Amino acid sequence: MAKLTLTDLTQLSSNETSAVSQINANMALIEAAIELLLSRDGASPNTMEADLDLNSNNLLNGSNLQGNTLTLGSTTVTEAALLSGTGATGSVGFLTTSSPSAATSLEVDLTTAPFSLAAGEQLILVFNDLTITTDDDYILIRCSTDNGVSFDAGTDYMYQHLSSSATSIVANGNTATSAMYPISPSASEGLGNAANESLSGTFTFYNLVDTRYARMDGTANYTFANGNLATALATSTHKSTSAVTNLEISVPAGTFSGTIYWYKRKLS
Figure 1 (spheres, rainbow, N blue to C red):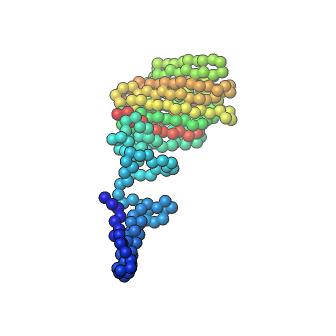
Figure 2: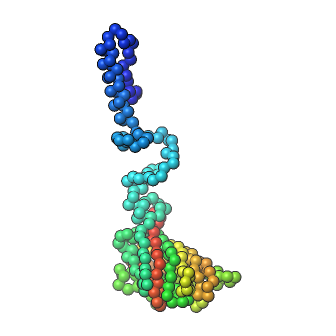
Figure 3: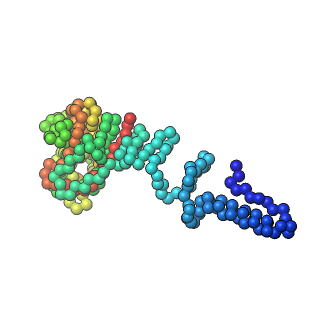
């Protein structure tokens, strides 16, 4: 269907008045048609009033994509789903940032926003430049199953840890310990407290709200108290089949500071 239809003129001399009128009518149609076009320089109006079909062609060299929903294949992903990690299976969403400063502990509630953790979802924790005040110390992570009234300790956890520093590789573990450990709790394998000595790493928590043991594993880069750079692989298990409602991050002595980023991955 033609977007613009003009009346052709066959001559001008026989009826100039009619010709001028028809030319003006054609020009008015052209002006109206131009007003319906998108403007390259942004001159108004420059907004769509209907869907734009690219006919399987690409949209190139975009800078910023803004919208309310995004459909990938047959799956529609909303802004809220992207931010909360509740979009398509496998999607990861950013939840929030924690910024402890000279803190003895940090607690998060997994049952309320922005966490609102459900079955089939993983929690991802990213430490960025975490520092401690006590030399050769470590980080503890404990679980609560009673909405933060108490945090399991005693022998409710087990862990396995492998670290590589300088030319040595050290392994240690325990099947009955008091917390999850992102880095080794053994003497001489803890985090140093000197300038530029810090901990960064990523850890994933599994089965936190399921009826199976909750598990954490991940990797960390940090500096031993002797100044050597260490790379660590860590895994820990919370030996309870009750859903975890809260997590607590703390240190055995002194305080800790840094930035912690929280994410959520939807698995089903």
